[in-house]
Amino acid sequence: MNSEKKLKILDIILASLIAIMLLVVMGLVIFQPADHKLVLIVVALLALVLIALSTYRYWLAYPEQTGMKAPLFVPKAIGLG
Image (cartoon, rainbow, N blue to C red; front, side, top):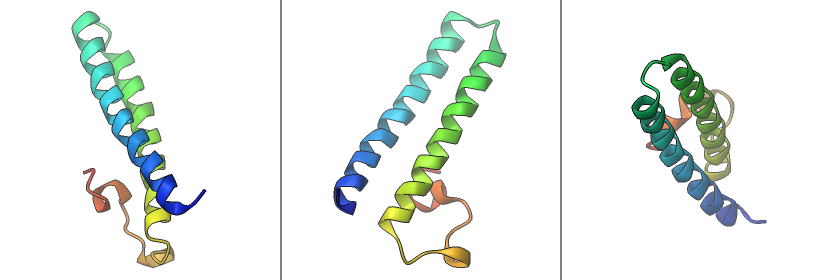
């Protein structure tokens, strides 16, 4: 599988993951307002997955940016922050 196809698939996954995060947060806050620990745990886990996927996407899109040249916070570098 070439890089362009991987980037398109990762873009779809990242966009759907952000939408899932928003729906989960809204759903948990609306339907279970007393249990905020569950909301924090779910959002934290989804955020970790989001950061990992966006880091991998950045590595595919910009292979020349390695080591000390790579940005510190990758989601901000690709426009997610």
